[in-house]
Length: 107
Image (cartoon, rainbow, N blue to C red):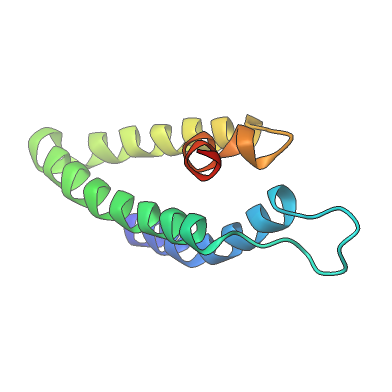
């Protein structure tokens, strides 16, 4: 199950970056859909890979310490909470979604 969730996360990140570009970087009146700037796209992909590595190391260690069944239950609850929070997040433009990148680009 752990391999499936990691693989799903890493395979769907390319689709997520396309959707984020179309939603938050669309220019009104343009004939082409919006796309993420290269630095933002690289950051999103890099964070996904780093998060996978850190999560595997930490939760593998935690599974050894407290038992795999209990640790897996905690991971599933964390994934459910994070999925709900992600679904409820919103913003009208990229400045609300990417405060770090938007502030560095403007200044």
